[in-house]
Image (tube, rainbow, N blue to C red; front, side, top):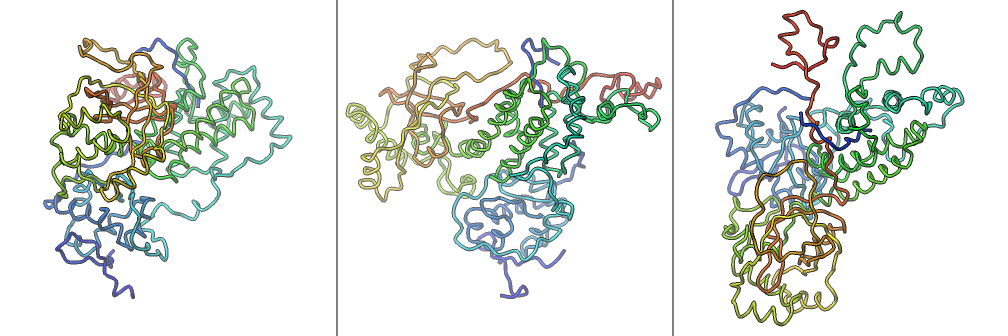
Length: 566
């Protein structure tokens, strides 16, 4: 088919087909560990037909359309979930009448299914999970309108490639670094020098620089011009050593306020745990395997550098431990993201539907508006839910439990309920008998084989104290951290679960002794850590407002270094 004949088939059912576009502060008693852009946008009013725009574009990216749309699959890469130019989408036949593009973007920002990237691109919030029914259309060449960030310079080696290794240290550099990283020097001075020299040895793309900046900030490393370092002319620097010049020019530094060893501690491993388990899922875009690898490689790359140059030998064991956390994060981050959307699973949702839980009365059939991003309706009909629950009890319950459930005709009662943290202790896959039951007797019902997980109580770390009284309830859950309960979970979900993963959920117990997850709030990595650093993420050293500095002739950097306050 020639480009003139190509017609883009993605459209809302019942509408005309689209074509390929042709148009162009709180004090903390415990130690706080350290180690290692705001853009202002004008408010744009959404398009008068914003609801229709969202409906059309959401359909383009829906499971129903995207899985069979060769052109759009080629653009977004299917499960890769690559951002697609909104300008490109606006060139489709059904979208050409919507102007201006800024109003279209403002309308799409309100979508619960799609997300805007860098203000000009769009993609699904959750990548396509089903197999495409067609081969993606091959993209002949990358157009600048689709990936404007690609330049010739970006094709050069950056130093962040997967198998990158720094060159051997020459004798001259070795002699220089004996002075720069002398163990008698304070750690803060050595790490500042290492960061400055490391940054000079790497090529920084925007995504990598963003990860590095957030990691440094979280680890207690400040950024920006240092106080009293303005006006570094050649005469001032001519008598300075290489180390002194590097320290003066570095934009990453450890402020003097962090010299208090009673409040701040060097903890490479702790920072790695906290950054990957609490910061990355919230503030960085890691929705694909490629993005996760790129993100975890940034700290790993820096750890390799300071080990190679022997920057702080006294913390060598910590650095190795932190580097191991990068490997764990690479394996767990995507799984945690997927589990957050897949849990509590069919069986637990069915229990919740039948027994007065979160999903009771939520089922609204298969209407488009009631279907989630994976194409599934929220909750189950009572008939389907009862079928799922009874099959699960038959497979894993005792004869007595099954008889009680059958006699009650599904009218079982919840005897305990608690919002709590859970840690996965063990994964229990379905045995041969259970698999035969689901694949034989229940074949054709659409029920997925059940496995199970053993969980124990886990207390999520927090720095907030509660002034609320404990709820009075007849809890039957284990109070000892060593005791476990069994939760039934579908086999496909077990592939993403690993021992150690943390779950925040509402756990319920039925009167027949069966536990189930009523709803799941959060899923965390096995190494989850919540550090006091969280409290200082947006903290800035206080100083006089800009107006006061200007009115009194006070220089910002020389007299307090506080942020401008409008």
